[in-house]
Image (cartoon, rainbow over all chains, first blue to last red; front, side, top):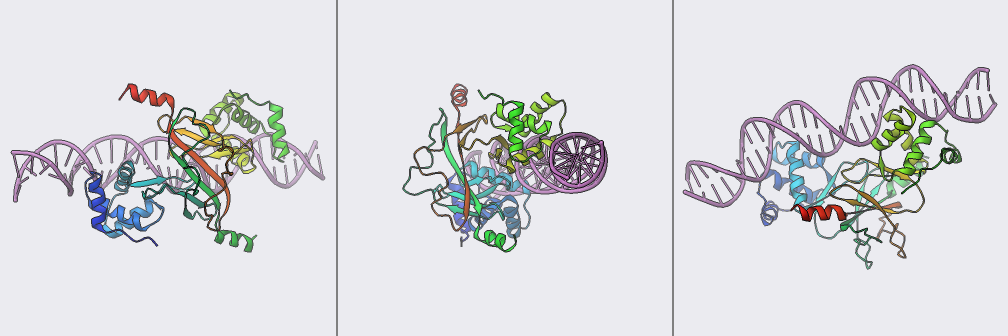
Length: 148
Length: 148
DNA sequence: CACCAGAACTTGAATCAGTCAAGAGAAGGG
DNA sequence: CCCTTCTCTTGACTGATTCAAGTTCTGGTG
């Protein structure tokens, strides 16, 4: 149950990153705090409900700026439009249901080496290890048994 | 330096999975054995060079059948079209350059628990852990220093 | 407090990757 | 050799995202 952050909190977040404070940006940040793994369409819808009218392009621009400044994390599971979430610095991963697309946060395996280790980095400067777990959620698994 | 598999080898591969042997399928399999991390366009181009003319839709269909039957692995790094490679059963991961898009195979971290462990599976039946390492390749890193 | 420059937003068209659908053609079991 | 079924071709179409040009607004400055 995420709770939506306050307008002032969102504005401060923007200021602390030297970004201009605008109504659409504040609204997008607030919605992101309330909707887990939101896609562009969902964010646009929610933002419009709050502000009356915002162009889709603006949503794309805002999300690009926010993720470019490390305020927001973007991830793109195969077969789904891009998803966004507030960057909380916890480097968690994602678990996606192959059947219904439900997405859940998963802790980075605890007590193990940080996920940034590749066995051999081939000279690359690796800055991120993206992990997506694919499977079937309990609900879909139950439905599959019921309807074979 | 991958070496292209023989026509007969490709045909046998198809037969062993009860799939019909057709010229386009054999050609796609052969090209996949020669081109690492090939995308649809690259495969189509190479296949046409060999066979004269094959529809793009056929390439999509063939790749769908091949990956549906476990002959081919598909992966979709954010911001790039889907990539395909022969399934060799080694469950390796991928390292992608953020600048030029170069992709390299990376061993699954050796000696560690298999990559299928999430810290908490939330009741999901997890069947795959997809890992993509993001970074900058040596060439692009050097170029970035030269042209600041 | 009004002004200005540059950043942000709107509008509308365009692109790219991939999918859908209907019909013509070929693989391979009988 | 023939028939059924799967495969391939053709062409239209969709969804997600990007590009480009013009208008509006934010926030620092006089």
